[in-house]
Length: 111
Image (tube, rainbow, N blue to C red; front, side):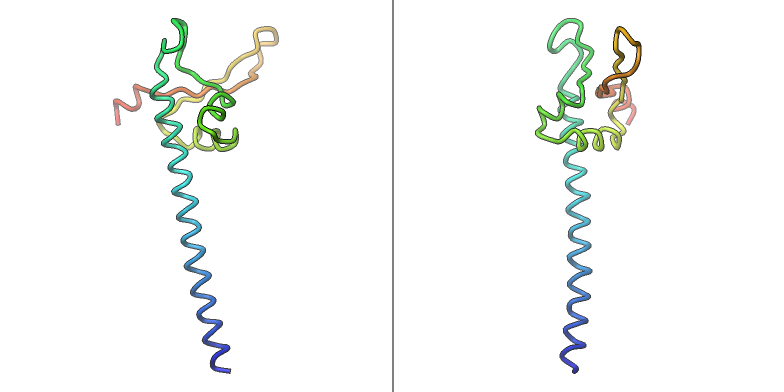
């Protein structure tokens, strides 16, 4: 019965190691997605695509360009301190119908 107790202890320790490693991998993945989003939006300067371009990009556009899901883009965008979230309004109803993210160059200069 000693081997059963030892096996139980090993399993408990192994589970803890796997859990900590999985949590670390998850946090690293979040950080990498957030940085990728920030770098992409930093390169999307005002006027880059046309003269009236404000440097704002929709969640759907960002998801397609960065190969992320919309949920991942939203999570990374909301956790970033370097991005501004701006609602887009429907011209007829004047209600918010989309979400834009843009890089906050002023905040980046202050940091």
